[in-house]
Length: 399
Image (tube, rainbow, N blue to C red; front, top):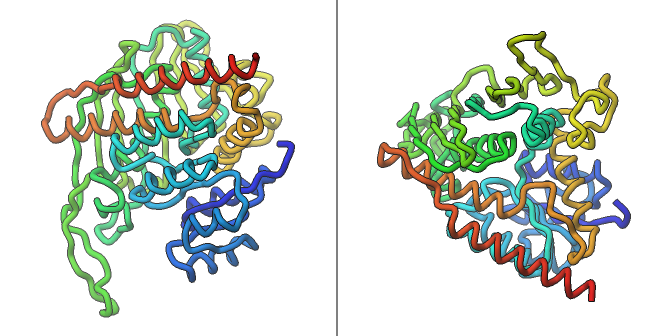
């Protein structure tokens, strides 16, 4: 990576710790961690071994001499923190979903695009080597015309009526639970592998436990009931811009699956099937010849996907590596002068904005019980303006 980059990680929960681990594997110096309170920040700094523990981002930016800010907080805080970091001249990596509303996402998209700074959304599941291989086979035409995409994400984090967390609070997580939390990943993954955006959606949301229980404050062993307004299960019929139909299933009440992604594409050239519980196997299906099982070995993968398989086929890359490879791509991009940077090979705030537009359409569809088109007009106008600005910057540098 050349010089040693310095990062601030805001949010010290599970995902924050995963970011820290992946950054260190990329030899990025974690200069500060920011917690929800001074005590929590200091405890987290001690637990992860050495960075500063700061009570807020402003303090961290004033003292940590950071290049990049990683935002790993509840969704409610993404917008303000990303905006603060960009206005301070820092590159930003933000967890998904990018914001609570599509209006906030549009604002961040525009600000980031005009800043000359690198911006990324942590759709890490793109960076399994065989997911990249599927995308490469689609772009090359090997899969052919896609007839149908079937995909799902299942976890069991809300299986019990006593399971909880900040995502169940609309004030912190937004109006959607499962569709925002894991649906944002699945829409991104499906769009990548089909090389096409979602054009329209017909969604059905299901609240499995409309009344949940949480520990009663100050009363050990006792519970209090509360009403859930969001969905733990969602099914989405989608139509992509390339004409392909898709069926997406989302569940956080699937016992036995801590986190499972499945993806299948039926194409005119072949079928493909991938399962995150067996992430190093890609099934290619044929009618008139034997099916093929591909492993993440550069010798057998599509040329465009080979850089994502860093080891010989006898070794394996897993969930943690998806973050490491994403951050490797982001920090390599940061190391290139702004006027010379190529198109990013990672998800940006433009992708995060697009994901929020699909989420908006899904929420509206579930509420109104009908198909809803995704309105890409504002998003595409922002992308067009950013491209014009980039051309002007590059032309100016050349002169």
